[in-house]
Image (cartoon, rainbow, N blue to C red):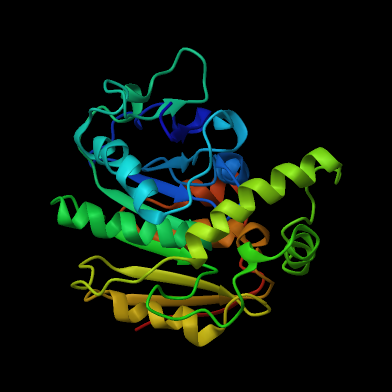
Length: 299
């Protein structure tokens, strides 16, 4: 099953658009799936098409085991994501699927267009390595957005959580807010969370950085000022992974600040992906929520 999901609001190309729409592929944090971006659907302007990544082992792909190495994820994602840039998605086995009955991914990716990537925490690492692979394949992304993740060349400042015993593992997840606002904590849910999140954290924590030429696309990084997982200097260090402009924004909140401030983050990403008209995001949600935004300076 393809690993990319298109929501109802992303089912068709904007009518009468002069420029190809930007496909923004979003990668969730450890333990999460495509539904973690469900509340992002409809927030983007028409010229930005939201594509949500669904890695194996969760939600509608539980029949497949979760991956434990970044290379495996990138190897499988590369042809699927590349298909979004040449209009073959939906016509090949590796294309995207739509959440809307009767609508195919080829309706959305019906022509070549620019591609951007976003990832939170573990998802930022996958997005980064995918950006490298796309660049090497001659299809570089137009922009890389990352949040809640130290720069890939930065060493971790905490012990590898994926090696913790189950009780300590769950406690660590609770401490970072990973279980806030989720389904009731039944034993079945805890078993699921531990299995999937442990595999995802292994993928993230056992990652080995390989020095290569810097990316040629801009990077925008977002950071939560109360994040217990990463420090601000580790996130600012993403500037060293690109030869293009780097922009850094901080928000109030912990590790999952990106959900609390999703409207402001979506607006910032939409503006960065210009020259598309970003008023669609404002009109869809009312006044843009910038509460908690602390800084936003390019460097």
